[in-house]
Amino acid sequence: MRFSKLKLTGFKSFVDPTDLVISDGLTGVVGPNGCGKSNLLEALRWVMGENRPTAMRGGGMEDVIFAGAASRPARNFAEVVLQIDNSERLAPSGFNDSDQLEIVRRITRDVGSAYKTNGKDARARDVQMLFADAATGSHSPALVRQGQISELINAKPKARRRILEDAAGIAGLYQRRHEAELKLKNTEANLARVDDVIESLA
Ligand code: ATP
Image (tube, rainbow, N blue to C red):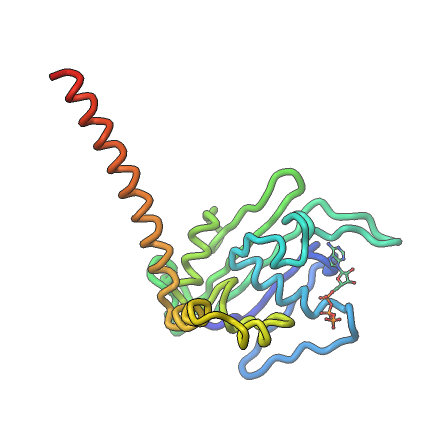
């Protein structure tokens, strides 16, 4: 699985449709302060399912929508498309039946976010799991934000362990275990209720 293209429309400073082609080898993004380099990295994190506005340097998720400038009105939606080259068929199961994967996330004012994978509606969880199983995603240690190295140096062992687990590709298993534990708890509560009903009928 290799990221091949990022397409942005109305996302932060990228008001006009913009394509970032990610070729083989190293891709460098250079430009003056404030030109939008970090916004590109945030777009990548966002399309992979980031749901914390603070990770987008915003107060609410709609802050990622182009907010307008002196000569241009604000936009009503933002969209990021991530194209992934899957010719080596390394995508997790359920996503591995085509040479190219396309993940789309769009946010519309007062409506919220919607996702698509290969043209079909998807849930945020499906997209988050896809990347967690592929040992990447919005929390991936491969995406290094400003100040993160010093945070890592000062991190507690538990937080460092999490980074190793992410890199080992078991973050998806943790999420599934958490969901299974919640289901188990609900089932236990339901069983207790059934016991109460049986007792009251006896
Ligand atoms: P530096 O090199 O200083 O870290 P950078 O190239 O990483 O800068 P970014 O931080 O990505 O730049 O971009 C900041 C720019 O994005 C600012 O000009 C800011 O006004 C603009 N911006 C952020 N959010 C929005 C938004 N919702 N609408 C319009 N512009 C936005």
